[in-house]
Amino acid sequence: MAAQPEVTAWRPRVPGVVEVFHAHFTEYAYPMHVHDAWTLLIVDDGAVRYDLDRHEHGTPHDTVTLLPPHVPHNGSAATPHGFRKRVVYLDTTRLDDRLIGAAVDTPDLRDPLLRHRVGQLHTALARPGEELEAESRLTLVGERLQEHLRARPEDTRRADPVLARRLRELLDSRVVEGVSLQEAAGLLDAHPTHLVRAFSSAYGIAPHQYLTSRRVDRARRLLLAGARPADVAPGAGFYDQAHLSRHFRRLVGVSPGRYRDSAA
Image 1 (cartoon, rainbow, N blue to C red):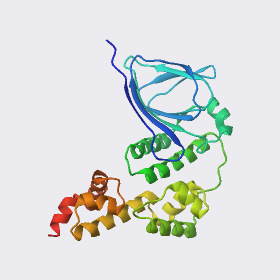
Image 2: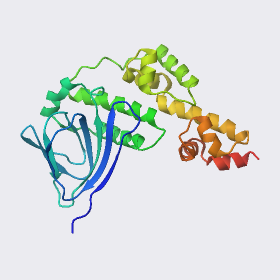
Image 3: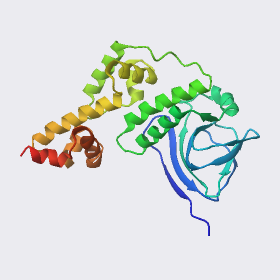
Image 4: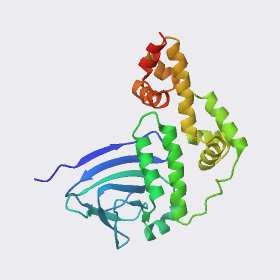
């Protein structure tokens, strides 16, 4: 009896992300089909074989596969035990249609750094409340993909301390309500990738890490004032109490409850 497919799909609140799709298939084979979005695929176990533009390709676990929109492809397991994959579908605000030709020529990318960054992206996308981190990681993934596709993105690596300071001031003013990377880019008239690079270069920390640190500091003050962790979470800008607890324990070393009780 064939094992039942395992599928998880959702649409996060991250601009440019159409869908996130995690699946484990054993005997299922995709027929020829197309998407209207870019398919960014990593395989965690097993391997996939597929046809794209009448050429056969494969996805071993150390490869990042980028399938362009509007180009037919299929897919099936290349091993007896099937495959486990994670996919992010991206719209053309993240990757331009003009890159389709290059993606058809080289859909499978052997790049350990890119593979690592895509994995980090999936971790952030799976956590409610981490939308800014997901946006930041997605910009770096997009930049790396464009480098592989021989695009010529603007030079975003140069230092820009003035822009970094302006972003820090914006984050400081939005500790509780937060700000998306796209919104920050619009407000500061800068490319999102340039924002992340400039801020990280100036302060040695990514924008989402800075904002999380500020939120934890706010949570500490509220806890020391006697507030309950459940009430502190939204008051400090966290999605829920679990979101608060995860970051609080990582940055402070104890749970919010233990921290509050220690002040008694």
